[in-house]
Length: 128
Image (cartoon, rainbow, N blue to C red):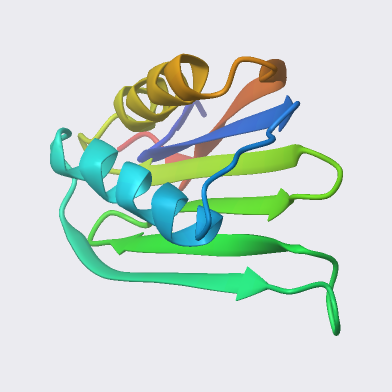
């Protein structure tokens, strides 16, 4: 029986994510919210958590919870690593959100390098 998906998950990994932004997690959260608002997704909650390097390595985690699933970013700021994921279901294309975020990151951070981009089908089910 042929399988069908009802969602997709786009994951992006970057190096060279170095910025002079004081509150980098909040900056990223605002970028994610803007990208979501420019898509067909509906955001329902947002949060960013900055890590100061005392209990956890320095960096942040930011997440926007969607009616359709989520968009998140996690950063090791001392290493310049950034991981993004855009997971949506239904008719919302996560690539739209990922492209908006990617374009803005490229404009803002000159050393940024996309080292991996993958997409996985999600909510797999039998075709009815």
